[in-house]
Length: 325
Image (cartoon, rainbow, N blue to C red; front, side, top):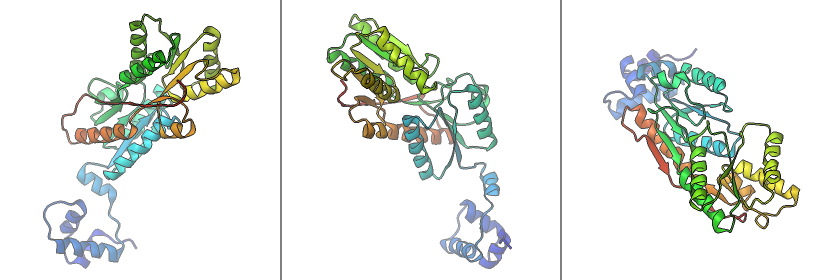
């Protein structure tokens, strides 16, 4: 038969209220009393009623994380970094992959709210979902504008896009093409595109951007990337807004007998650990994933406490100097 709170109180020779205060860390109690209660719990193999504790504290110590897909190296490493920091702060995590589907995102959001989470970290692309406007819940966004009241933690995507484009120009390329996602999606990718186009115009060059949906089948994506070389056989440089597409471009170049960087130069964006290990030759812009996770968790904790937070926290990027430029 499972031990009850009153059994612990009887063995420790204290009141049930005292046991409850020990469990919930409420009020002053002597070290001797606390030790007596813990010893009684160990003797009886007592397991606290977690649900009752959550109701008492009005918190669940659960944090929801909504991302497009952890299959993407960036979001995979980000989810690990977020979970690690949240666990260190005594939170458990529920993760949903929206796959950039607004209906799926809304469904996940409703499920997370039903689990009575204490807060939410969002890295998904969709805006205008009603729950984000109406829920009374601490939320932090990563690289995304969810609504004007939700703080954003992001890498300096404009600086990264500027650095990438300038590196290609410095290497002698003038016919430079940018590969990005649809304009309606992330703030992050949009800022990378803005930087590329601004730098190109500043040098009197015409920006050319190919919009490719990240979630389409790889065969379709490959066909769209191959089209770049059909449309612009004289391309001298490509700036890909993510390393996954950059890796596919390297594969296409090899199949076409085009050498990188001899025939054209290539630079990616994200710079995850896995990409740097598997494709060390790929020049890319590194997002500070650990720092993004640290700032997101810290900001969420301040929101949970009802404290003021900055609307936007921008973190510096750096270059991984591979051999593709």
